[in-house]
Image (cartoon, rainbow over all chains, first blue to last red; front, side, top):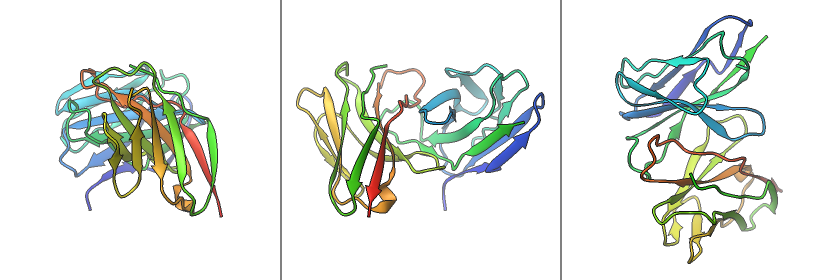
Length: 115
Length: 112
């Protein structure tokens, strides 16, 4: 089945540690996105990538880093510089970025808790 | 990006129709209207989108006002599985990021 996988579903880390969240898609989509969701809020864009080896900052990129070495993979690293890292992290993909009617497919999310 | 306004919450009875409103008075002529929903502890899923004409798919119908300043998502027969947060989103074809701008959405509760 085609889709997006994120792992792990739940992640606990100590304050000051970097942590990398995995996102893999087998939909052959060019564009991939990382969003953050806080309780009771909508999603906010962290980073996005239109194509392999290219990515751009979203609205709340500070304290995060990404890479896009393969089309199907877009890992997100939450660094110790991120002041409030505890949140629900969602990865998404779409055929490409440009067409507005392209639906975005979301993964199941990773709930990160920093202790 | 143009903003949307939705009620914070709505309730429905199972097997009855549900009309979820969305106001977008600052919509531009090229903005598409998208609806996504998010079930508890899951990622959002696409529901439907439209530009000017009413749209139907297997999940729902989208009714767009003639002046495009508002729209309504219609679930024809609500089921317990439809309980979710529904997001109304405007998407500009000229936007540089391609991401979806999510507000807080409408939390739909479905009573048996």
